[in-house]
Image 1 (cartoon, rainbow, N blue to C red):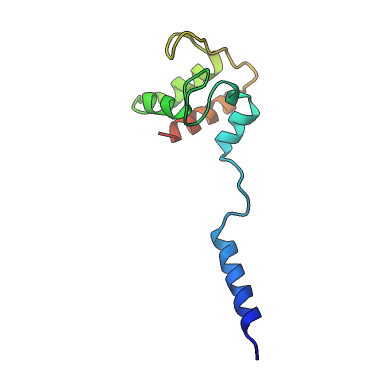
Image 2 (image 1 turned 180 degrees about the vertical axis):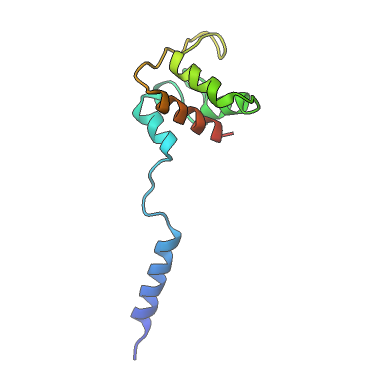
Length: 108
């Protein structure tokens, strides 16, 4: 009796449990992509705005970091990262801004 098909099926099933079903981005990254944040920011390198990892590194030690970044994401700002101002993101809900701030800080 040839057991090769049985072993091949068992190996395939074990592999399926170890490998993610899809390569979907993290929820925060997906939100940043959907809300056009990636036009000015990237995760690892500066574009028009700072890299998200740089933002996380700068603010991670603040006790109010999530609240601070949530407010900055919603209201915008200028002068902290250079001459280019970040416009207010009025299209974001408070929950979206909070989720983005939480995700950014997770990159530290």
